[in-house]
Structures are given as structure tokens and as C-alpha cells.
Image 1 (tube, rainbow, N blue to C red):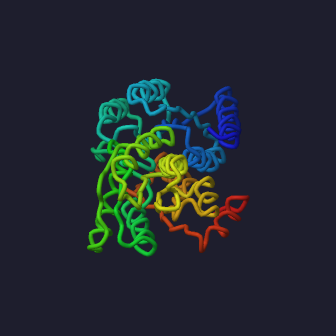
Image 2: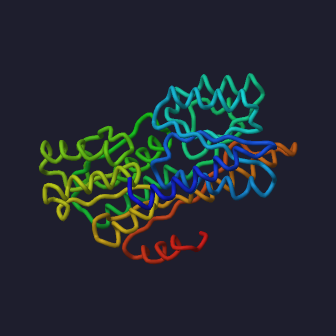
Length: 309
């Protein structure tokens, strides 16, 4: 974990602990991991809206562990959270937790990654993940033809499933672009690096990689650098993290399909407050995505230094 990310995490958790000492109504959020700047920003988006209305936010980190997430959600339900925001580790495996919350009368709002049974949740607020995958494929088609592609996936996550579906649909339009393999990278830098090293050894013809998120892309880049092949392989990803922007600026990453996690958080919080006020809400909300390449990376880097997008 980088020093910047570690500092952000410390600051976030300090705020959460301080909020936990206060009295009054609270809402909970369970993230699949907090070892990703995306979820830190999403939590900040939630907090920015909820705190203005007198709600404190309790953040739980599942650490990629479905059982821990189940226990965390149960704790939030039994603690009588007004609403639970849920970012599932496993889009199917979380059904039991959603059913338990519904039985206890605690509404759940899914953020970022949809679940297999949307009837169990109040609403879903997520990026247009199919479009994110399509944008990555379009960037690759402009820069790498013919292409021999590997996909670094996380197939228990519906957001990642949708990204890969969008990517595959777009790539299918190009006869000279072939997907050689789809491998599980775990959605982390640490998990993707050894998978990429194995792919490089077995598939010398490989010249392109689609990673389902920026941490996976950074793992692939690390592996390619280690064997001196980064200049021969184009990497595209999804997220729009600052680390990815810097990698694009340095010429190591071709593109990232930017999500807007603070916008997801703010939208989800606003929907929750409308529901708590007795107002009707939609069953799903889709948040925009934008492609970042070397042509517009400076604009996004400037925004990340203090502007709100």
C-alpha cells in the first residue's frame, strides 16, 4: 500500500471512529475492501451528504472476505442502522445478508457492484460498467492492431462481469483483435502480478491486457516491467485512480475508464435520505464514466489535486 493511500486510510478511519463516539442516528456501509482509493472516495461522498443531515457513517472493511462481510452486515443490522450501503465481495454470496436485513426492516442500497437478486435491495447506484469496458476496448483498438489480449478478471463481482462483457462486445467488432485468455487476478495489485508473469511466460505473442480495475492494471505493469516487456504490451483498465493517471502520464498505461466514486456516494446518500423521508426512489441509478488517455490526463490530474468533478 502506498504512503498516500495509507495516510488517506488513517484519516478516514480516524473520522469514522470519532463519529462512532457520537450519539444519534447512523447508517452503515460495508465495502469489499478499503485497500483501494476508489472506496475511500466513495465513503467520502456518502459522508459529505449524510453528515449535513445529522447522520453518522460507520464504515466496515470486508477485506475481500465474504464471511467477514456477512458478520459486518449482521452487526450493522442488529445495531439498528437506518440504512446499509453495501458493496458486495461476492454478488451472489451476499444474498443471505440482504435477506436478513430485509427481514429486520433495514433497507440496503447497493453501491458500485450490483447483486444477483435486486429485489432484496432498495436500489442500486453504480457506474455504467458495460460502457467502461467498451471504452477500454475502443482505446485499445486505436493503439494496438492486431491485438492478442489477456483479461485480468474478478468474476465474483458483477461490476467486473459487466466491464468484461462490454469489453468483449466491443472487441468482437475487430477481426484482428483476439482474446487469448481470461484469468482471475483478484482485483488487486498483489494478486494480478503473478498471474501476469505466468501469462507472459506462456503467451509470448500477448501484446495487450484489459484489467478490470486500476490495482489489477498496476500489478500487470509491475510484472511487465520486471521482465522488460512493458513497451511491447498495451494495458487498459477501469477506475480513474490517481495512481492510474500517473501511470498514463508516464506512458505505462494506455487508458483507464474513469468512474466517479464521490458522485456514486453522494447519489446513494441522497437516495437514502429521500427514502427515509418517505419519498419514492428509482430501482437503479447509473453514474457516468469517462475515458482517460494521454490526451486528457493532465485535466484529470488537475481535478484530482483539489477540484470536485
